[in-house]
Image 1 (tube, rainbow, N blue to C red):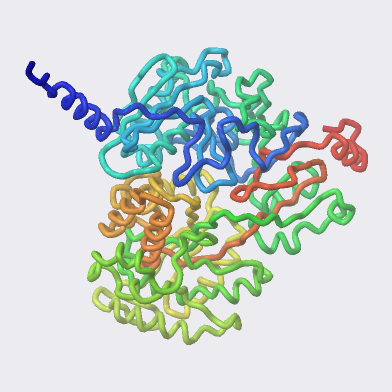
Image 2 (cartoon, helix red, strand yellow):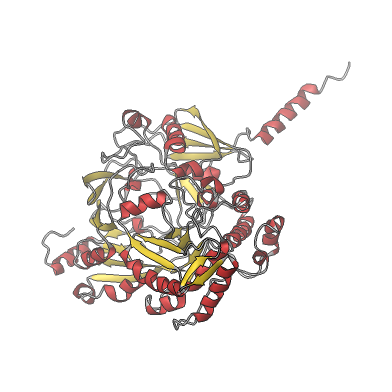
Length: 614
């Protein structure tokens, strides 16, 4: 008898291998995804370690915001969205604040990722509900993705650039397919997407500002709106997800009210008068002297520094390189010599701050010392296209002895400005070719920052440079920043422990002219573009660290900002009505895990003479 043909067996094996390498193989369903390594919490965890699972629900919390609002739509560029709208909407997953980057199922019950990470599939919890009782379905998830990517704020367009499409695999299952290329965090960032009701937005315009409370599925509902002045949310007693492990011990307040104030000075006085309950202080002078009051001395107000391990990112004077004279990096480098951080810290901040020297400060991602071999491997292909100093040493901003005498620094500035084609004539710095004087505007939104800006202005004046300082209201400021209608601003880039796709919105050429993007400086550098993509494609944690440090060095030696300062703790002040878990999260303040202690609240109100404790 002849030997049976083996072709069908071989063909079957090839088909299986093809399926594996195409990413079409069956992926194991899991309760959570970690960017690198394994999730800290197993599939049967009951709550995060940094919450109190027995925290009582109840109480009323009043918070303060600066400026105004004109919309309850947080998903578009138009308008100024009210604070707190995030509590209205659930996402597919929720992050753990004691891990670098791990997402656990919220609306999603399970998650499946292709072996080659070319797709991710989410199976929704069948009990997921919008506030009107309608179920959250795959159609809602697909609608949310397509709407946010095509019609939402530019942030979403940048964030989801590498997501090709969403596919319906059933009433409660969706698969997202990704563009080719290594992008390990895509399955996680899709999980962070807020899920909108398709039926609701088919009857209501998505791309319009509105003060009508939107339909969501989150733990809070809009209770009342005083346009431009206040908004109050109330905890939804019928919230479908209140007993999920990711929500246990969180969202404890019955109501949360946000009151809007004209400026920070008025807001601080209102806090001391008991008009609201809790604030995070970001002004060192206020922290040192501004809270003195009978309530503080009597112990009714508490002040605390709560340490954290969260990256502090970058704050600084940001140059708009779309405008002259900031297109020249030598000019940008020169002006940094006129900012005296040491004097500012000593005389204005009571020595509270540390100088920022990285876009990823207070983390292992920050560049330091000479580049490592891994960094040099990343940076090597760009020799001749980036400053040679990138390969030699870490960036150090200009420093002083804090005395206020900065003549040596100003001489360095003059040298750089001369190299860039500027000269001092008649006490003014002018372009040697055109005779145009150097003058620009620093745009501010907070009057409290004027005391920092004015000494900087005086030092620039000694160089013959005229810097006007202009403070505008929050609505005008937001509009001008979104349109890049400024010469210089105080900008902030927050960072996480796992930087990734959001870096495109921060630094890349494609976003330099996109209104509303976070590329505030207008960076158009192909090297930066490529380094961002290299960072996103990092295959493991160590590679991510090294590639982030390489990007950090190139950004710093681009002189796009004059770095400011940072603090490694939260400065919080609150009226003594709260309790909080014994173990705080490492990477967040965790205010959503606090609760109103009924006994403390009653005692506080009794001491204040209020017969209606809250």
